[in-house]
Image (tube, rainbow, N blue to C red; front, side):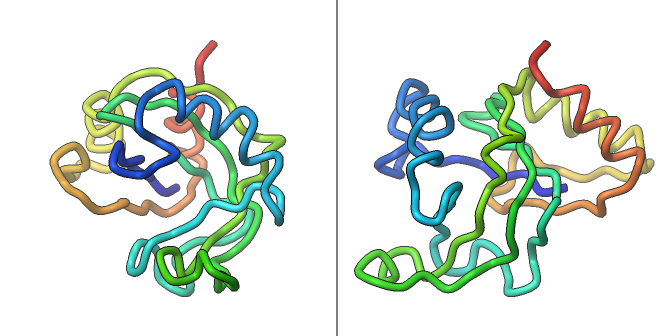
Amino acid sequence: MRIIKLSPSDEDMKDLEKVQDYFERKLQRRKPRGQFLLTKGRISKKGISPGEMIIFSYNTEIVYLALSDSDRQDTTGPESIKYPHYFCIDTETIVKGRGTLSNLEHRLNQHDGSNKNIVHTQGWPKFKDTPGMKLIWEQFKSQ
């Protein structure tokens, strides 16, 4: 499971309305479908794989969940300067999320007894996909 923190400094994520448009319309029209562009250093070469659970947050609110549809790929064309890599999101699995990163952090720390800080870090934390993580991931889907 990977947590991706969406940034208001990204043109497609300036406000919640743009985030919704991106997930509900724009990703469907991308070539390849579901293409999620990455700035340098966001995800390592083997840092994401098809079927991986993803939680997307915006300003500490969990806004969408989905599964990855590819591993990391190299971007070609003019976008490759700003976004050298991408992975594809399985657009059929996109669902609205609910809750906060704080709630998620609490559940993750309860699950494995650790004291991970995901709220106050800039990184996109990754956790091993396990049956327990899947249960946690499911809890943050909007009903």
